[in-house]
Length: 139
Image (cartoon, rainbow, N blue to C red):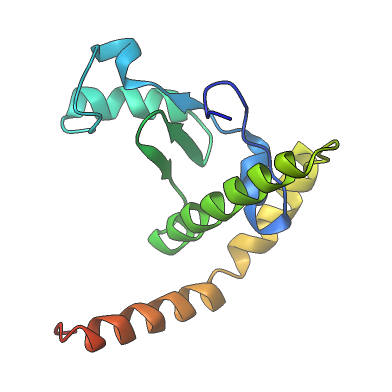
């Protein structure tokens, strides 16, 4: 199961943005063997071209990148893209046929998700601040 051979699909409503597609960026295709980091404008532009009009892009050997109309939306998409990947993998391991969200279902559910970003954002912010305080970091 690799991000290059198996396309990511939207498995649940909170990752509805995935239904629009998840292109794969392979830095080696354009730059040869590298440290896998997007470390300059040229590599950033190449990643942006792969992302296109999608909200996420999978990056071979690296992870993923997410965008949105605000930082909160981009974080929400990043978090739920990871959850979706785990759900998709587990569903494949169980066997049978996956029935992902259609593009239309994804668009409808993503609109609801975008409107409700405040709730998970506040939870993540609270958890992060609590963890920082527990580590003795200034907030």
